[in-house]
Length: 311
Ligand code: G3H
Ligand code: 13P
Ligand code: ZN
Image (cartoon, rainbow, N blue to C red):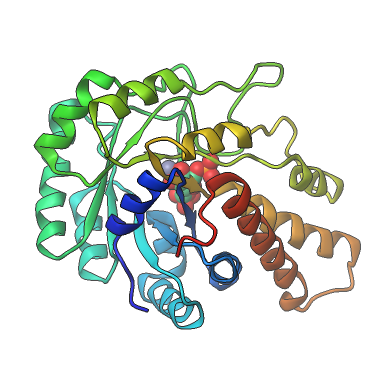
């Protein structure tokens, strides 16, 4: 099967009350772990690549890994640029074969975000590629830029209709309290998402796909393995799975997950290297990391996203 855009995926997810997982990929083992889980569960899938991933692994290597995954798994897969920071990187991914890009103009003024997003949409749509925009700002770390919880800005529902109609973006990422990275809430504070803002946005944009970034749950199981095997991750806290399940049943059609993949891979690699210091064959530890990723993604698809059997 060739790469698909997210249009059909989101239409079905919206009406079916589930969401599509968008998982960040950087290397072969991550691509394999994610796509084997989705393939076996017959789940549609979004693989996403950040600017950092592209710099690390190289555009062509990532394209070829995703092409291999399409040959090995009979499911619809979209390849998406995560957090495109400017027109040039979006253009490069569109020209280079991606089926979807995000233009993240959320750090700009409302008017500048509109102008930039509109420019990307015009270029992308002419080539059959879809575009995700963002309004509001998440807390957390993104491409080495850290935004504190105090500086994060929830999306204003009264801006969304104008933003979507003036830019033509196909989906919209919003800020309702999720954040990037492994430290989303302070210990002792109850995790909280602003479902009231999500509901208000959904009312103003009927049948329109909403995206949640920063949606890892930071499984205590993997944090424990990392801590017990020489890692340091005290006070890592993520978004409770029941909140994500609730979001997946609403207008939220795409849920972004990267940190949980990093934790699953790191837990596997650390466990082997710490417990068996004599191991030096990379396959011995990478295969445990890859297996953890497959287990994690299968769990997300069935218990959080609800996208199993929807391919
Ligand atoms: O939202 C950001 C993603 O987790 C990608 O992170 O820029 O370190 O690859 P990265
Ligand atoms: P997490 O850091 O919660 O996994 O979020 C990833 C993300 O939003 C990628 O765009
Ligand atoms: Zn993100």
